[in-house]
Length: 348
Image 1: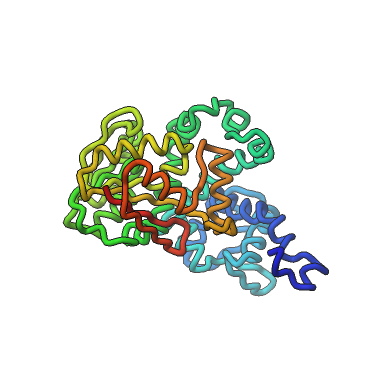
Image 2: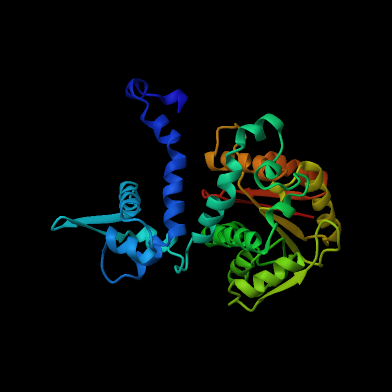
């Protein structure tokens, strides 16, 4: 923004004010999801008044009217005023991504952002000042055990798993098809959580066998609470840091390395390299920074989130290439998808 400011932006900082109010806009959408606004409108045969929405969702009429108007203002809902009464309806975007029942719903991602990430970000200044996560200050849990905080209860674990599941609804197909992986007959998704990315992999490469490898409690929750319509994906329990990992032609690390500092990343990559046969490989899926430090802004924001919640960071392609080379991998290819997550393929 700084290099391209127009005189009008200097006279009145519209863009800066938009940024300053960004957290309020987020909370408008978060609150509507938590209250069930989008599901109610999606399932209604006709547009609804604020009074009707408030009655159905058991809120105040005044508060709901203000929330609905704000959603119209940010173009998430539509409104028509008929006979002095405002009637609200969903846009296509709200129906597709914000209603819980939609096949592409981001509802679980939004709930996690609202109830876990939002409280953590209140302590961002302390995270920057101290250079460590804020799990202690936010949740009263030790900063050293990241996943003890993330999995601090079954409810919280399911929220996190819902976040991961939603991520691959948006980006899964693009990251698994960034390279032609059909030559890998056995694929293991390490830390594959709900199996959402593995299902995308199995659909794209039906001749390959795909296994999700994750902690026992995660596998149990995935099979109990998340749809497993693709029976080609199997689950196996274990800990990829402390235990053995299954044999495979290709290992997938999707949103795993960004959780950890370099030493733990190198330890895991070396374990994968040792398990690989010649010609085998590893697929990294991460939000990659630009080498010139100018973006993408989403990856830069994600990196701050790793500071406030975990022990790692987002990295540039050269950082991942360095780690891969250091652990023995070669023939490293990078593919930017143009969306939130990118892919790196490296061969043993």
